[in-house]
Image 1 (cartoon, chains in turn cyan, brown, red, yellow):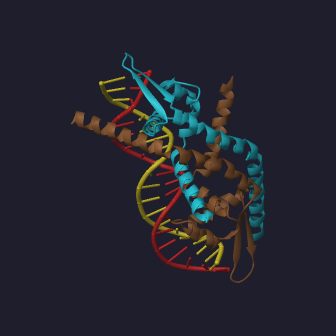
Image 2 (spheres, rainbow over the protein chains, first blue to last red):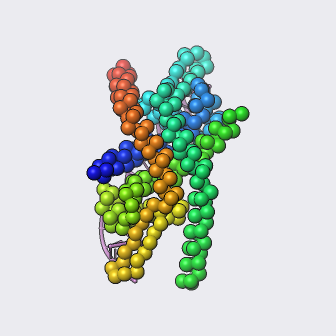
Image 3 (cartoon, rainbow over the protein chains, first blue to last red):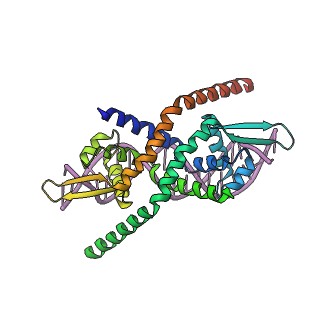
Length: 127
Length: 127
DNA sequence: CAGCATCCTGCGTGATACTG
DNA sequence: CAGTATCACGCAGGATGCTG
């Protein structure tokens, strides 16, 4: 009977990961934790992101109510982005994920190395 | 000065999401929480996964030390998969993510609807 | 400054058929 | 049963140029 609950857990988690599991979302959320930032400030803060991807990421975050977009109709224009309460809440599981990452990264890297070594051996045998 | 730490947080989290953010990993981890399972048991438990993707997902999990693979050289062959300690630890942030998902899904859906409505209006104006 | 439009490519994924 | 091999494809994401 926990089966159904488990399936539900899986489903909701997978959905969330689908939402935030792309290349840039968590990075954007993360820099926005510092407070309200302008478009180019975010752009400079995240190494390697293209204008296109930043715009898309911000738009999807705004769409889902995770960030607010504030336009100041000045010249030149100015647009501020800020995490909403919902967005700040997301930091909780994100920090949990981060904790796991930091704590277990060495173990993962070690396992990966062991696995690579085993494969090397298997390769030699068959050659 | 929290800047650097923030950047590190972001980096490690992004890396982790890159690891588990694919389409099937969390689903597989999730069913394996129930205990040791055979290949086809997992296959049946996860609706829609192909043999190919199940194999790839399991192999990557094994590579990173998140699951163990045990082969029984019987005929027909039998292979058991089981979460390692490392894999079970992953359930902690996963549950955190799940909690967030359940709690805030309504808010996200509502925001999404509001956004769609606003876009509809914007569309009308310009037509 | 803060984007949008367009073109292009690689990679993750799916479908199908075959094997020890 | 527990995979492997091959093909095919969509789409996330990158590069570049243009605009209000």
